[in-house]
Length: 330
Image (cartoon, rainbow, N blue to C red; front, top):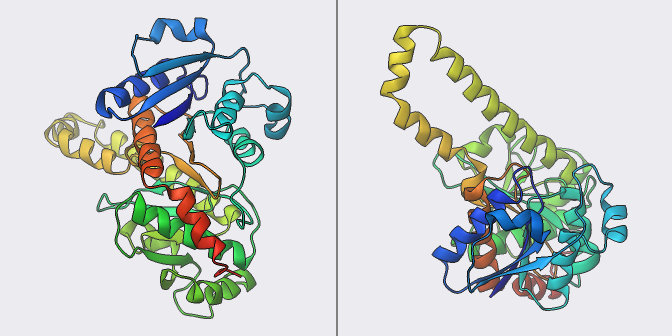
């Protein structure tokens, strides 16, 4: 199995990207990693390994580059070359912590969309209080959606939850403003009917306040709503830990208390850490394309590669293609 890795994408590239790659190679003996990027820039961090191949690239897609234009003009960019390797069959999947929009464009225009998929969806695994996490899609690949799109998202999320996350008969919920059937806007009302007929374990509407409590294994919504939910969760977690830190540093008494519960607080932070769950999969493409968080450290890259390996191992893209190809989502 060959995984293509963008060595130049992300806030901590290339050092942390390479560290995560080397950790992955040490853990998984059945993978090869082809890392794309500027050889001179990456050289100080690289270690010789018989399953690590470096492909030199002369260009980088920057965080503020316009996605589609960058993909079309920067043909020798690490992200473009990585996606092209997947299209050409030189790699089985790819991972990048770089520009999200550019990676989605590279996935759509280079790797290509599965026949029958109307819109690919961005699907990270988000944390829950019990540490199990849940898959949510779409979180920003498409601002608008039709009921049929949400139906396809539900099928793709269900396959991923079962094949990659190992959840038998995963519970699929539709994000809405109430749990009762008939709630919501025109999109969610129509989508409810679509999901009832889909080949999934649809449990009905779920509310945003219950997401972190593990109300469903997969939560489906449109990209506009999903992206706002994602950023609200991230912002709330950041704000909570910031306030907690302030409380524990206000006096000698609270500092002593903090020292006593340091290990437990570390465990809580790890439970809520996105990097423990891997990256966000761009579902609906001909091969796995994984978007790691822009601020990914080595652990986050390792988990994104672990996630990618599992997707390839279980042939998730082919399973999605076969299921969607049966024409059960309309």
